[in-house]
Structure formats: structure tokens, C-alpha cells
Image (tube, rainbow, N blue to C red; front, top):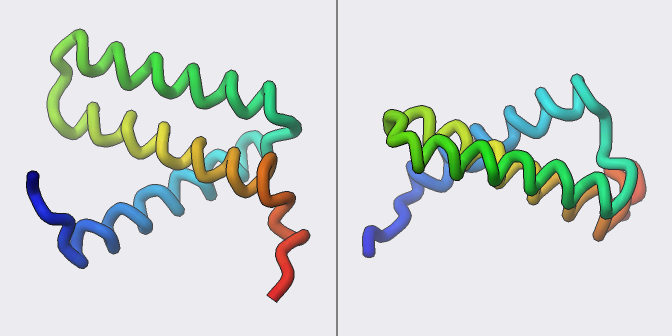
Length: 88
């Protein structure tokens, strides 16, 4: 197994955060758990197609980042609450 380096985590958080921002700007927050699950399943299907069609590594990475971003959006919007609900 390859150890995740600091560079990996920085890149991961930046890419996932940017994808979340794009999705938020285009679609807004996930309205409920069912919609969130549907969105995650759609993104996962796109990743599966990228893998089964043997797309290049960059295409697989982009799809995997989208899956991760939608999972984070699900947590934020459907599990923990809307962004403005967070308390410091």
C-alpha cells in the first residue's frame, strides 16, 4: 500500500473542495437523503464506466473526485445539516 503524503491530502482536499463548489453553484445543496443518494449513485456509475471502458488515469481520477465530493456534500447537507447550521 502506498502511504498518503501531505501533498496527496492537500491535492485531494483542493480537488474535492473545488468540485463541491462547482456542484453547489450549479445545483445548490442536496435537498434530502434520497436525492443525495441518487446523486452519489450516478457519480459512482460514471466512475464504473470510466474503469470498465479503460479510460485514462486522469478521467478515472476526475470521476473518483466527483464521487468523493458528492459524499462530502451528502454528509454536509443531509447528515450534519446545511452549511449555515454549523456552530463554532
